[in-house]
Amino acid sequence: MTRVAAIDCGTNSIRLLVADVAVPDSASGAGQRGELIELDRRMTIVRLGQGVDRTGRLAPEALERTFAACRAYADVIKELGAERVRFVATSASRDAENRDEFVAGVLDILGVEPEVISGDQEAEFSFTGATSELDGDDRYLVVDIGGGSTEFVVGNRHVEAARSVDVGCVRLTERHVRHDPVSAEEIAAIRADVRAALDLAEETVPIAQAETLVGLAGSVTTVAAIALGLPAYDSEKIHRARISYEQVVEVTDRLFASTHDERAAIPVMHPGRVDVIVAGALVLREIMERIGAREVVVSEHDILDGIALSVA
Image 1 (cartoon, rainbow, N blue to C red):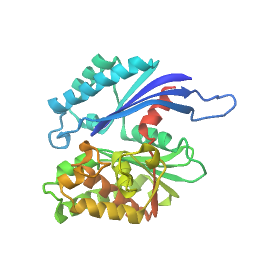
Image 2: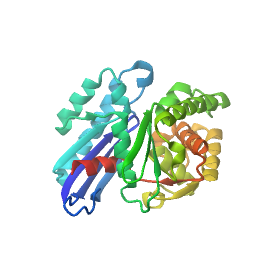
Image 3: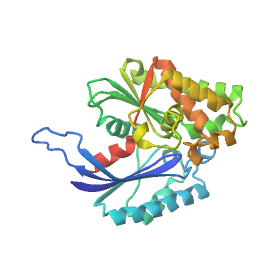
Image 4: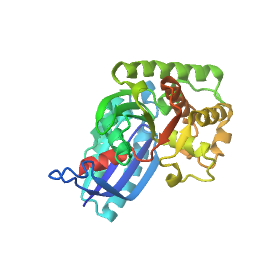
């Protein structure tokens, strides 16, 4: 067993996973993806991508929120005695002109340099993390709806094709939403962006040919929690839940009609998702409509688990 720490810093949130990972036995061919035993998993909404779509730069206040979370995570990593640390940064820091400031700050706090990975690398980590424990020989479409981008990955035991497109819940909200509740025109504008992104994804990824849709990240898990009627967020009940297309439609229609305060009052709603959940839920709905999916399998295991497995 190797004790590792994986950090995933996206457009909306920064997350930490500390786990013991059993290294695969290459000689026997057993456990090719490794076995992961979770010790600590946590998430902080930092909105690193605040304004990046408009300015092309990381805002000073967004950087400070992110660095504060890194300091807290550094304490957890030290306390649990992780032997190896890998910090992966995704959409917002890929796009920013001043990402050197971000890299220097993380290096100073955690002692590791953040790897600003490509969308394709992000997709591969997401696929590995989401499918490592799924049974069967289905061809999966893994969809990771982030703050700045959405990753589409098709494969079974290995990635066959992947594509990252620039539609995420934060990016779409900042680009289009000005009213509360969201207006019909704003919903139409978000839909148009998502449909154009799906056209791009389909150029390289056969998204309609997969047998099972697996949905990742906060927008998907929040929609699932609302659909399940949970009185509080419960990872164990959400992980591997199957949410029907009809349930997704019902939840998105409810979100379209709700005000900020009404969304904030939903028991499972994280405060950092109140403003962006409408766009995130709509991305999921549009994907399901495009491929004709009757349900989505929700996974709490995602890019973070893929990063942790890669460290060992």
